Length: 228
Image (cartoon, rainbow, N blue to C red):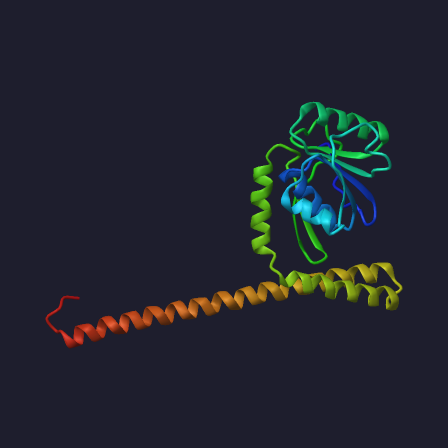
């Protein structure tokens, strides 16, 4: 693995997306969720990107890419279907010291975008280092199913508890033990709820089988000639 996993704080930072199609739209939506300042360079836009521009949630330069369009950009996405433009964006971004992701070009990118999802402040990101984005998406779906929406509240609770512990427990090792215990207790409570739910499902299943058996016995009693 040659990549360093990291979460970027893009709040208020200038980010440029070159391209106005569906790939660019996905990048823009993710950047807006991170509260980035987004500018698009493209002569054409999807309907959703056009609405975002009309709502002044993004700025748009409605023309083809030119050198100098990446000035002061912190993060750059090259999301066009033109190889020459993709190459130019990559070269100019790297020369300017900006982080750049080139669609469908792992070697030309200085970072990769993982398959990810969030439960409030809990963010989960998965990458195969570009080997199989399809596998990363599949793993994301599996984790989404196992990490329910209750984790939003769990993480918020742990955030508040952490603040109180940092103020009231001076010993670092004691704090670490307490943090681990708090996280474990939340996990245990979730497992306990899952166990209870499984037991309830088992009881309902047994009751259904019992009712089915009783119906069978009743049928035989009413029709003694039937075979059992």
